[in-house]
Image (tube, rainbow, N blue to C red; front, top):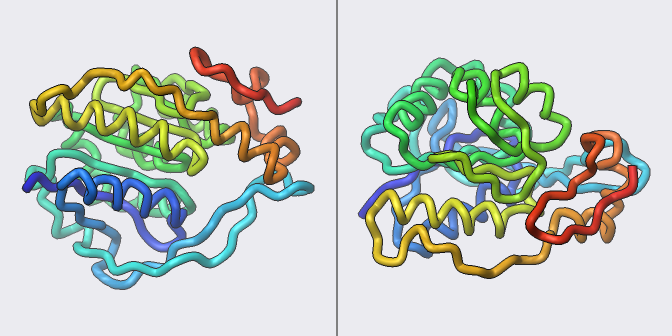
Length: 235
């Protein structure tokens, strides 16, 4: 059974860990969660509340890590997932986490990164000449890391599939599964489904006050990305 590894730690965003974790299990992959240490992790919930200039944070689920970064042999895995939350802020300083990331880019294996996940990619030095999405406030980090920021839900650049935050989960994982299955030579892989899911980032933003909160972090163009018709927050 092919294996996929998730790199994360304490204060990772609950939905951004569990959505890919369960989606990959559903598709028949074995999934390991790697962290600085092999122990139970405390995840968090990030939400968008009217009147706040950025996201709010509450405690979320706990979950055990399967393996410590230092014990990971990345060649055992066919793909990498880097969720967001605050975990990438500190795991990017871990030499083994960066070693793992570099392996997947050197071998052109599938990588999914969401929200603050590209902070780890930038620290590993793999964003030079690459295009990635991220939480919009991280546009400067992507660019300082040598990459090009694209404000979209399921941005594909070769082996890299990225998104802005958990409202993009469906589009992010849909595109990642296409890239992953193509890399495994599965029948029908690489074909676009033709389905265009609702832009849950924009719709959720308005319903949950993100139009106010996200405006401070959004680039001048707002959250609009073609070809999906989007409800653009006002800046």
